[in-house]
Each structure stands twice: as structure tokens, then as C-alpha cells.
Length: 158
Image (cartoon, rainbow, N blue to C red):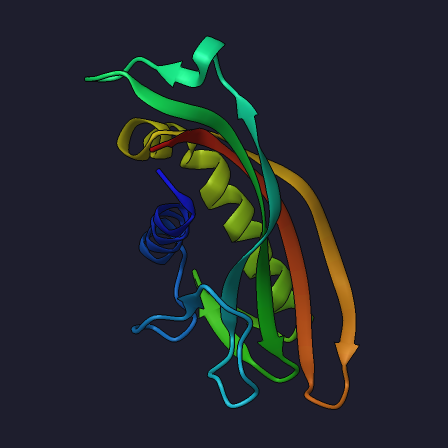
């Protein structure tokens, strides 16, 4: 796996497992949204990471021995909601900060529940929730934002 693959795996997994406030269509992307984007929106952005030796000579045993390192990649999963955005899930309507917090809780729940599936199907060793940050209201753009920082571990092969 590499960084591009990691982005694709996580975006696809979130799209398949998150409740969609728009009903249909994509609303989860690898980027920070432009101001003319549709909200609510979730963005995934790699913010850092490191590669560590995994073994002597850094060879991992797979179908054929390959060079590999343990990758530990930090990502921010941002939930963006306009001040008056609303969505209904299970007969409950959420607006503004409540919608932002509901969607952030679902992101955490989906990632926690999906660890085994992501490991079995994509080789992700672990996903850790490192932090949750609520940013102040962006008054100019009327945007609420919550950032969930995660660390994803996998074997980087080449």
C-alpha cells in the first residue's frame, strides 16, 4: 500500500458506511472544500507521518519477499457544516453544530467498527483516534468545523 492507495481506501470506506445527509451523491473527498462546494462535507487530508524499519534488511514476507517499512500516517478527517445546514437521520433532525457533532460521532463509530474489515481487505494494521478538535465558527463563511485526527498504520511495500 502507498499514500494514494490509503486515501482511496479510506474515502471509499467512509462513503460506503457513513449516513449521507444529501441522500445521494458523493460528499466525502480528499481535500479541503472550496467555498462554493456543497455542504455538509467531509474532507480527508494527510498531515504527516513516518516510516520505520520493519525488520532486518527491511524485507517483509508476503507471497514474495518485498522491501517494506511500517508506515504511520497522520490524517485529519474534517466535518464541515454550514450554520443552517440540516439533515434528518432516524427521524431526528440535526441542525448546525448538532449536525456537525452527529456526523463527527458517526465518523469515529464507522472507523472504530471498520478496523477488522480494513485490516482483512486492505492491509491496514490499525486506526487510532488521536484527537478531536472543534474549531470556532468561521463567521465570514458561516462554517462549523470539527477535526478528527487519526493515525493509520500499514506496511509500506515497494
